[in-house]
Amino acid sequence: MTTGPDLPFENLLTPDQIDQAVRADGVRFRARMSTPAVTLWAFLWQVVDPNGSCHDAVLRVIGWCVRIGRRPPSTDTGAYGKARGRLPFGVIRQLAREVADRTADHTRAKERWRGHRVRVVDGTTVSMPDTPANQAAFPQPRTQARGIGFPIARLVAVFGLGCGSALGWAVGRYQGKGQGETSLALGLLDEFAAGDVMLADRYYSGYGIVARAAARGVHYVGRAHAARRVDFRRGRRLGAGDHVVTWVKPTARPAGWTATEWDALPPTLDVREIRVIVRRPGFRTRRHVVVTTLRDPVGYPPTALADLYRRRWTAELDLRALKVTLGMDVLRCQSPDLVRKEIGMHVLVYNLIRGVMAAAARAGRHAPRTISFAGAWSAIRGLADIVCAAPATGWAILLRVVRATRVGHRPDRVEPRVKKRRPKPHRLMKHPRDVLRQRLQRHKT
Image (cartoon, rainbow, N blue to C red; front, top):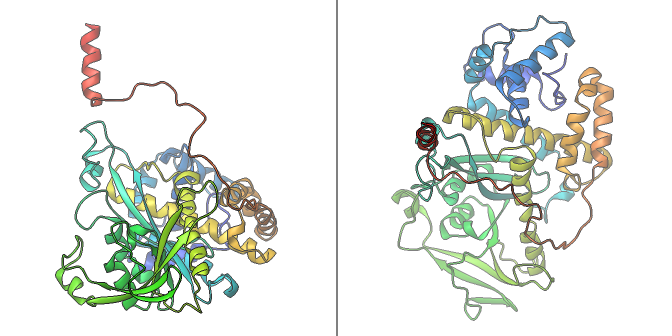
């Protein structure tokens, strides 16, 4: 029997695994058509379908039931909505992590960087429908007037550099104490093990995160924070534009840290700073400084660390895959609880796609990053019926097609950050909708 309505992922996530995760969470489903597995797969299709609605999800379940000879459920969306509400967020998170961990475990040793697993941290924002519940949980920015803005959530994720899977994520408000990217990233340090490398942008290169990671045996590589003054005349010189300096813990405790957490950090930290000069025409940044806790200049030469930091850009592409290719940029759910589940479902289907890409890469002896995410997702949707109808043959065909969707070799490509296509000349909303509606009604009379 296929896993669910037209989703060819049974090799990566089975109904038994879904049921086991639900039972472990202590949630019971009624013995009807909306089983945990069917509910999960219907929800997955709904979040990635550009026109997905509860009605469309139910119609997919009906079509699937007819094909496998089961009695189809009613077209009423009430039962599906209740089943979706009973599906715990913890189950979604657990399944997404299991799929990501299996994909990461299969990443070959040669895809590690100098023997280390590298995990990239980056953040973004997503918007959602303007409902009172969403506004209360994820208030819109203060720069937006009431009634014409949208609730915004902040998202920070950890991606595997080799396989691209989302290994963990945290969601918070756009503004407020303890809701910034660095505060959310602190809660994701459990995704790292001793010996791992944490690769991040300069926003994360503050004393707190670097020291907390070092205390766990996690190495840090990132760009120097904009507020940090770097002076290569000081410290222990390792080479031209390469030295080790001692950072001193700031006396002022940053927002989001408790006094106990901040006091537990060491008073000083030895950090290596490397000057990187970019000589490639068309690149925006001409010069920057890489900071790292990898202080051995022989085992980790400056050029290797500079090249590693350059690969941090893969996290931007991973977030683009989530937000643009899978449509997570603008969420649809009307309540905070379902918004969190919707984000989790996007991450789950993203990891399942990465799992297919990793399987195809292993079969063809390629690196997973050489396969196009958008091309793989297109192949999965196009061949879903074949894989569900004949799993063994269809899976082999799917892997062969995905393996052929390679990313073009475009080193150092230069593209201007502009759009050629102009937006349609619609007027922007500058007042709440009910105010505009009242004005129209007065004008009619």
